[in-house]
Length: 478
Image (cartoon, rainbow, N blue to C red; front, side, top):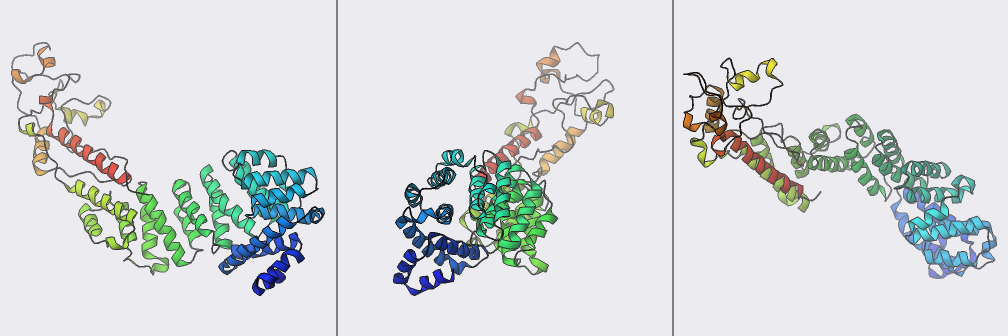
C-alpha cells in the first residue's frame, strides 16, 4: 500500500508506471487497505480510493491471459468488481482468463450483480459457498449474496452477512455487513438482533462516511420496533455516540414518532434532544419545541401548546417542518374552536326512554344489570365522549360550549312529557298507555331528523372537522 500511495502522490507518470509494474492483486490489496481506513473514519482517504479504482481499472483492461494464470490475480479481479468496479472491465478481463469453472461462474454472477440483474446474479452465485473459497474472496461473496437475498430470504441473508463479518473483521466488508444487518433485523421484527447490530456498528464504525445510511436504518428501526425495544436500550446505544450525533438521532426519532402518532416515544426523544447529554442541551432549538409540542398535544393544556407553537421561529425550520408546524397549529386551533350547534337545536326535543320503574335511560345505564343492554336512542350520557381519531398527531377532546353544557345537564334529568303530536310513528303504533302515564319510546324506534339531539350534531360536526385536520396533517411530508 505504501508503494501505491507513493506513486499516487508522485504524479501521473508514476501512476502509469505502477499500472504496469504492479500485479493486479497488489493494486487491489492496496485498495482494500484504503477502504478499511475509510470505514474507520479516515475521510481523507476517499480521493485515494477513487484514484486507485481508476488505476486498477486500467490495469485490468490491459491484463492478458498470462496475468490471470496467477489465481490471486483472478480473485483480485472479482474483488475489484465487488468493491465498486466497472462491470464492462470485469466481463472483458474474465473472457480472456483461463481458469476453473467455479471462478468463471462467480465472475458472471458479479457482472450480473453490477449490471442490475439480481435474479440472474442469484442464480449464478446460489450454489457457491463463501466459506468454501479463499477468505479474501469469500468475504465479498458473502456480502454480495446477503445483499441479493435480503428481500426473498432475509434469514439466509442475515446468516451470509454474519459469514462476511467472520471472514473479514475490522474492514469495510464488516462495516457494510453490519449496516445492512440493522435494516434487515428491523424488517423482520427482530429487536434483539437490531439492538446488537446497532451497538456493534456504533462501537466500531460511527465515523464511517457511510454512517448516514446506518442512521437512516436505525431511526426507521426504532420506529418499527417501538413496542419491542425499550427506551433504556435506545439510550444505551445512543450514549456511545458523540453528543451532536446523539441529538440529531433523537430529533429524527422525535419527528418520525410525532408524525406517526407515537406520543410516548416522541416525548422521550424530544426530551433527550432538548436536554442533551447530562442536561447540557439547548432548549432553544425550534425542532425540539415543535416535536415536543406534538407529543403532548393530547395530554397538556391546549392553550399552552398553542402558545408554544406560536413562539417557534419558522425561519429556522425546513420546509417540511414548517408544513408540520402549520398542521399542528391548525389542529390546536380546531380543538379550541367553539362547537356550533345546528340551526334547529333550539326546537329539537330530547326524548328520554323510561323503563318500567320510571327511571331515565341515563339512570338505568348506571345499573350493572343493564350493562349489556343496547343504547337507547335519544339518551345521552352526561359528558358525550368524542372518539379520538387515528391521526399523525392525536388531539384532545374538544370542549363543549356553555350553552351545550346547559342542554346536556337538562338531558340528564327527566324532560317534560312530550305531547302526542310530537311522538314518532313507532310510538303511535304502540299499545295504549294507562291514563296519565308518560309515553314510552321504543329502543328500536327509528330516529327522525326532528328528534336529533344538538349534542349529537355537535359531536358529528367536530369529528368531521378533526378528519379534515387529519388529512391536512397526513399531507405534510415525512
